[in-house]
Amino acid sequence: MNPTETTAPPDQLRMIAALRRAVAYPFPVSQVAVIETHISWVLLAGEHAFKVKKAVGLDFLDYCTLDDRRFFCEEELRLNRRTAPGIYLGVVPITGPADDARIDGPGAIIDYAVHMRRFDEDAVLSKLLDDAPPAWLAGRLAEAVARFHLALPAVPESERHGRPEDVLQSCAQVCARLTTLATDAGALDMVRRLQSWSVREAIRLAPVFAARREQGQVRECHGDLHCGNVLVEDGEVMPFDGIEFSASLRTIDVIDDLAFLLMDLQARRHPTIAQSCLSRYLELTGDFGGLVPLHFYLAYRAQVRAMVEIMQVAPGGTAELPDAALRYLDCARRQALPSRRAIVLTHGFSGVGKSELSLRLCGHIGAVRLRADVVRAQRFGSGTGRSPDKYSAGATDATYECLADQAAQVVGAGWPVVVDATFLKRRQRARFAALAERLAVPLAIIDFQAPEALLRERIARRANIGGDPSEADQQVLDLQVAGAEPFALDEPGLLIPYDASRSLAVADAIDAWQPLPALLARGPAKP
Image (cartoon, rainbow, N blue to C red; front, side, top):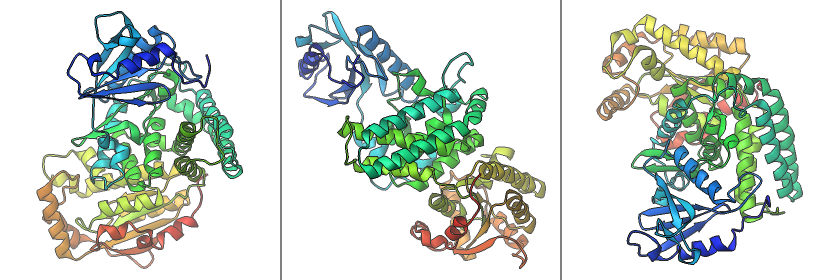
């Protein structure tokens, strides 16, 4: 087995040449296109696609025999039907002889292919991000991944995957491969710094990896969840092309699986989508413990992607790294920097735009967002209209107590947190001021301001559109205005006024949030 040779044997090359003919298919075809990767071919024939595995053996996979290829075709079908059942249709034989190969023909079986429904390549997430992504994208990405992860069983204790030593080994292998690929002195220095940090972090986090495995967070995941492997069709998010050739590469911590997607969103310069996706995933799964190793996994996945980008253009290494590889290495470098912990509170009446604006803020400072509306709905139910009980003093106190508990988990894991709630009462603000003091982190309050007429207009528009977790209506706004307690001069925290009547485009500029970045820059680093 040659660990780097990706050239298929001559008889398989002749078979692929024969499958370029329209006559090779059991349905009418006008033309056939072929996409080749280092381990497979994809034959595009009309509305169909057939993925054929190269008869090669590498250090991470073995497709050498016919039985091997049939097995891994069946595995690819099984695994990817979990997330994209409408794309993966079956496994079909390829019949010979090689020079006259046919899909499911009358001759002897010489190979196998995964039969797929052909889809529009412009519907792949990596392409969608090149334009203006829809506002609902982050939420649906999170919901699709969370739904997938929550349905997976935990790996049995007897199965030897996802242990701390496995994480360290995978990390060390990627780092070692990168050092052989990056021959430029500057890039090599960065890679070696990342290697040193990654190994130290993997050793430091070993008890966390072990505990999460015991808690059932290691599962048979996707394993390659970057933006190029996510399809978005008619508003539905469908991850595809998960790893079938290695159980160890897909049997991982669920937060490692998510990290690949988050990292790729960040590297493609969509930090708001990344942080919104993370925040929504945490709302759905409650896996706040996953934040502890997340910086490590983000850096690891960025290095994996940098390695792939280099190997695609120069398998033996290169002194001039491709731009994409440099972008991923820089993403990894940023994860290795000390994270600045902080608690940021929103303040303002319903309809002022706290939720949308706080998302922009999270993208700028890399924060996790917690939402009172979501916590309230989870604790007291939703979908039946506004219940007075949900907004009673007791229910409101319980909502803020839950938010404080979650904020403590986020900050304790080394992340800044933005708490999206009205914070109209001094006691609500005091609870979080005490939390910030206990955790020794800076506290800031963004005071969102807008004319009352605009608030009422936005609330009415939101009610007509529907789909928002907030159930606050005009009556709730009346109560808020009547019961709001102004800031006292001695209240702790940095108060930052924000004109929420401005357009959302303003919020996309980091200058809009001054002096918050300066506060974070001088705040205590994570331990």
